Length: 408
Ligand code: DGY
Image (cartoon, rainbow, N blue to C red):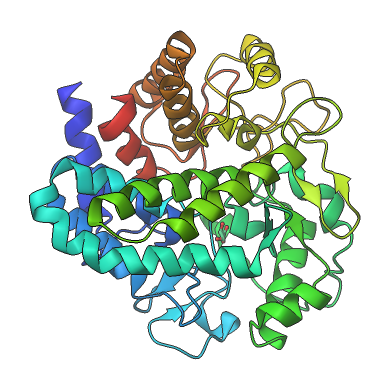
């Protein structure tokens, strides 16, 4: 285990580009929002100072309206598309125009609590930034207590079955010629398909043509989905933000209101089949996707016996942790990104939630599964939940981070 710990720290150091950490060399050569939050959490296990630095560089990308973009393009890097020229956001550092799951408040709270004496001034500096990001979500993205995404990339679960219905409404036929870079790094069978990519780019073009104006995007965008993962993650993040507010002696009413609102929204995510699901806000239809995000309810502090039954059912069908899509479903594919593979950081979030809510044996099983995946195959981006085949990028930062904090 010592040897694997050393490898994990080594990956985080190797992926350091000077104040920020790339998710993996080649495939993702910039600072990604939720990757970076996980990574900071991992770095905190051996270098608290550097962990805070990671958080500060992430927030240099924050927009004036509070949004924290999903990619911060600090400096030129090769091998990625779509880069800063495509997003065309008029600010420095250059950024993308969409956000990503707000795990930061949760990770920052953990980093702060590991060393409050050192962290106090950093926490004071970052607190207001976290509040304005969450406030941006509430003002622009929360519908009936559920969090909407305007692009599948915002969910972090790019090609999840959750978006299939809504994606059918997006016209990708006019995007023209472009060269994908992801498939030069990774086996195309493990990545989103071309028809998905055309639509991803059509949505980027739409947002750019709106000047990234949230109101215009809300009115006209062909894609708007209440993402069950986002709702759970924001709810959890608001609970952690509330703890930080108490600790720093800030006012708490506003955050308490957000928590009540999101708790109501969670109930609306429950579909007629009895599990938590995403909803196409253009049609009101459930996605009918039991994904790993459906099981983030415990992480969000929401107990649910139906979900516990579903979890046992799903785990009985696979070898390693929670698959990103229901292995009983026709669309299940054990190697294609978010349509089946198991992701270490999702196991970690689900496991942490289960453990906090008293489901200790099942939480331990998820940890052991993740431990085996990493120790037998290495620090890959994701794995087949059936036989543990490693997939996607390797020497991956968040996989190393969750080894150091949770799985190892
Ligand atoms: C990609 O380019 O595949 C990323 O997931 C977008 O953030």
